[in-house]
Length: 225
Image (cartoon, rainbow, N blue to C red):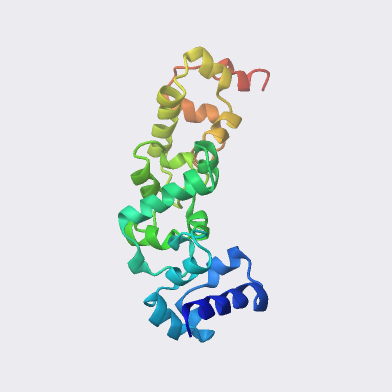
């Protein structure tokens, strides 16, 4: 079988016989799929055993190698993984920082074909991976999905202090106006306030700044019994 015939057969299998969407193709295409459809010989002879080289000849530059779920682990280097993550965020999905914080987690890495690389080089820690790409740009708790067991009382107070003093740079008056449960939710601090302070924003801030503020000074507590 020559290259032209092999590609015609591959195109026919994908588009006519199996009617695969590109999303489905990314999930199942690989060495095993080609073997089962008797394309292992042309794959080996004409594309040096590389499923990606074969599909890239059929659909030039349509896919990145890492997008395939079946991409071999030997494909990855740390540098390639970070390039792939950057390309996925900035070019493919064009995510701004807020959008990224809302969707970036293990599930997203899996869907983007990057979970294997994360497991290989970052011990399956999405935060460690993104922090290597954008050093110190994000805090771990800013992401919608923080890992199980992440929060401690001390980490929560550090996060609250950093959000108030460094990220938002709030004056006392601004803090009294803005600090509410809604504000804590927006800054991803809802889980610890419920876990360690029984859902009381005042109890949490009073632990951070003991006796600095009176409860009813906060706008969120005015007119509350």
